Length: 172
Image (cartoon, rainbow, N blue to C red; front, top):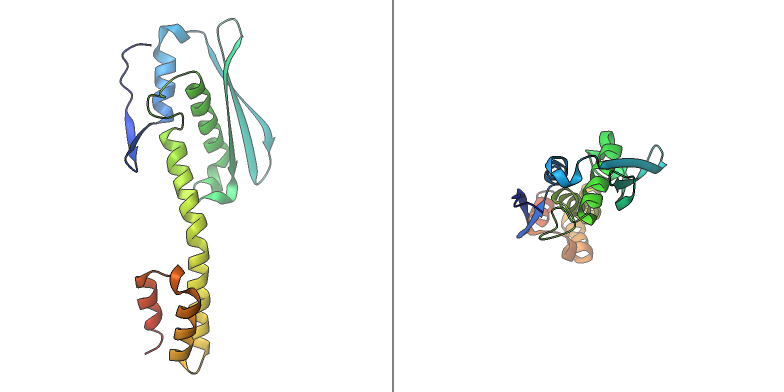
């Protein structure tokens, strides 16, 4: 490999190479001249997508593959672009399997930031739902203080101080 310096993105203290950096390297290096990146979608429907990317040398011999899966409902960006995101992730993984941009990780910056966003969305959704239910419950009760105490007793460990303070406003 050349002395190409990949731009990286710091995510939670670790450096990750972005997919576009891997693609730029692949396209500019003489050793990959006449090689191909081919995308296929073995699964694609209105809600899910699986992409398989194959990298083949100039003779058509498969050198590396990468796969990715995306769900339309998994993020705001995926509502309109889940197929594109899926392909980008699969390309990044295939290039990583080829050995490009893996000094610190096979996962790309794109994959890691998407995974973190999904995890945060998965863990925050129930708390938001609890808040909605808690507000509705407190508002519906005549003894708001007692309702507040019941909520904090049941869900207190799942609520932040800010959320508890927000609920207290409905007690006054």
